[in-house]
Amino acid sequence: MIKKLSYVLIILFVLLIAAGIAIGSVLLNRNGGFSKEITLSGTVVHEKLGVSLDGMVPGKTVSYMVSFKGEISQTYDVSLVFTPAGDCTLADYIDVNVTLDGKQLNAGKLNAYLSGDAINLGLSATEKDKSVLEITYTMPAEVGNEAQGASAAFKVEITAGQKGAE
Image (cartoon, rainbow, N blue to C red; front, side, top):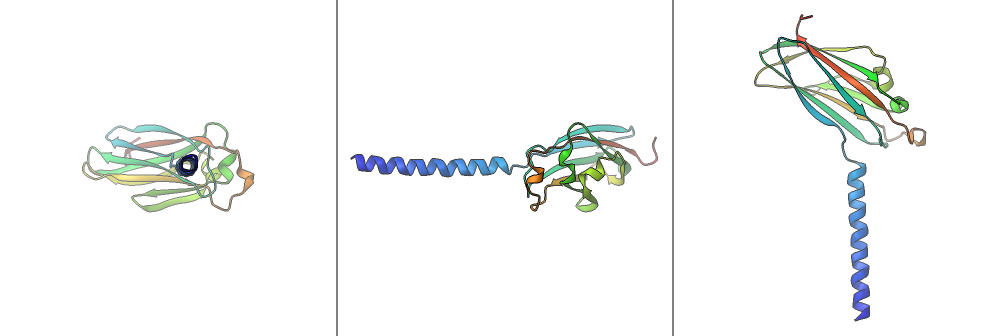
């Protein structure tokens, strides 16, 4: 009887360890980004999106997606400006990739984006179809201990309006 109970306890212990490993793996590799929709009209739209890249580990990618929908079908001017909003010691290690509707527009290290220079893009948006801007932040797998404990907090300001509007 005691022998059977000890076997059951050992099996339960092993199952609990396996469950803990599975849950920990999911939590460490979760994608912390967000998705937002912006409706474009005749007025200029300003959106500030806060980004915090705390807890990045080598090989991790976080995606931020912004969908643009137009009230009328036309081309819109859109600009992105990245500005520091706190500690950005991780900026030297993070790769940024900017795509619009699946086409790469821009890529480089985060520290180059934090200069305050605008990334300008023209996009076509209709009432029915959306244009999707995706910004991905990746810490390459080869980054070592030098990035341990580093973080990056910044804002991405999106300004969008009808093409040629002030």
